[in-house]
Figure 1 (tube, rainbow, N blue to C red):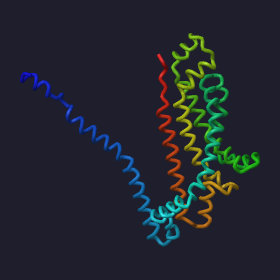
Figure 2: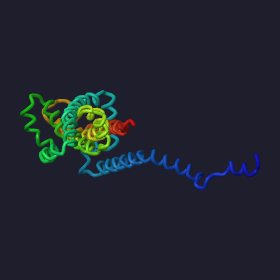
Figure 3: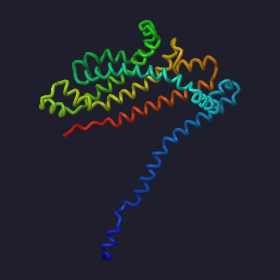
Figure 4: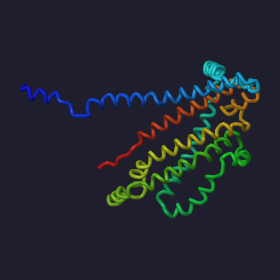
Length: 279
């Protein structure tokens, strides 16, 4: 190989060499950023615990500090009490989200695909959406024969709107060319809905379900202050009544971790639900 060819083979395009370390640094920063956020939250918690311990007026609430709270959290996990408290709540969340999905997704498809239906249903839906789900609590207690049924209703009442409106927005974004192609190929309404519309809006539906989960998870705890004797809300109420603030803080941590895990799972599922029509 001649000298000129050797130099050409060893030549590096301008800007290529510095780019690799920069990309590696950016990747490291992206991986460490969540840890920095968690460390900052723990730092604030630790500082708050020091304040509670040092101020006599707040000394009764010292159980909220990280030390007692984490010790109580470990005890909840080791004794199995964490699962016994979480299992009924997860069952109610699942039933409430299922009811909201079964009602909200079809209504969202209808509102998104029919301008007339949107004009008719938009005002009452927006009005109902602005009513706090907990405002339905007296009606739920009178309507349903069991406390569990009332709680599931409140969760569904909170979760239906994100699913409905996210689905409707997704339907409106479906490319009209796809629908025209389906009609030209002889597909009926049900076939078009099954093969074009639903796959195209699946990510929107899952995003709405993720938002619904966040709302339902917030409603769950006060809803379980009703006459049930199980669930995370009941455990929170019991810890408050017995002044077990370390246990209360541990339960709050448990609620946050479970909610974060569920949200992350739905977020990953929604991110993978990207649909590209076959050509």
